[in-house]
Length: 126
Image (cartoon, rainbow, N blue to C red; front, top):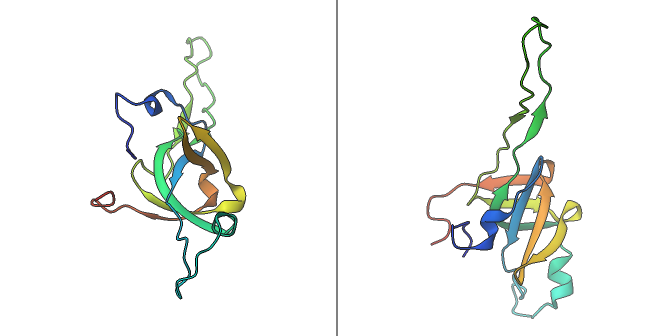
């Protein structure tokens, strides 16, 4: 259920700019000694992790100056792609994340600069 498929509604979402849509991993609700932590404690940790669901196009690159002004120009915006890819495990700073809920599932949107590390394992969802 972490993937964008043709039959789910995540396919219609468009992430804008340098932002990344992440589905947070379920946090550990216990300490190492076995004590249960309330959800308010685990959600306020500075660093969180989750699965990258969708990524934006990246950073816009300014277009080069036209050297032949008589030619018709097509305004095509070019982007520098992001490092994050769909399916990666991202470790990100929670302070910069925007929480949202879509189809009764909790997601966060973070800028690329808030992602500290990516894990791109092939068997990540297994």
